[in-house]
Image 1: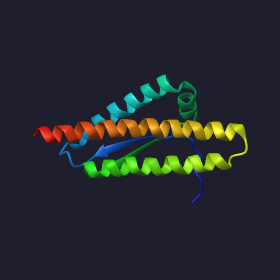
Image 2 (image 1 turned 180 degrees about the horizontal axis):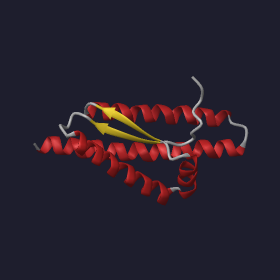
Image 3 (image 1 turned 135 degrees about the vertical axis):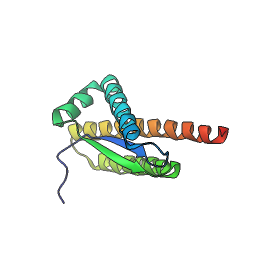
Image 4 (image 1 turned 30 degrees about the vertical axis):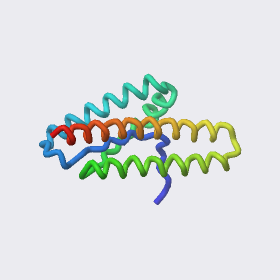
Length: 127
């Protein structure tokens, strides 16, 4: 399998254990995509523009539980570590800047997911 031609992609994680209808899940995923698009445009316009120029790739991921959301956060941490190791071996400044942007976006996504998980955990404790 070859390397993806996309440098950027939006990953939308959809919880399937919440009992939402397919229409509700789609609506929530759309809200997440619009919000992520607006936030990316505001936080890093240059990277957002590049994502749009590449075709604005989006990927929907399924999480069957709150525990799965934790696993997604852990996977993002693993990706950040891998990219940081790649950066150490990068010779060209442009490549280092590209890796820095990837790290920035992964860390921002990780923080959003952690906040969503914390919110859901608080809701569960209240019940």
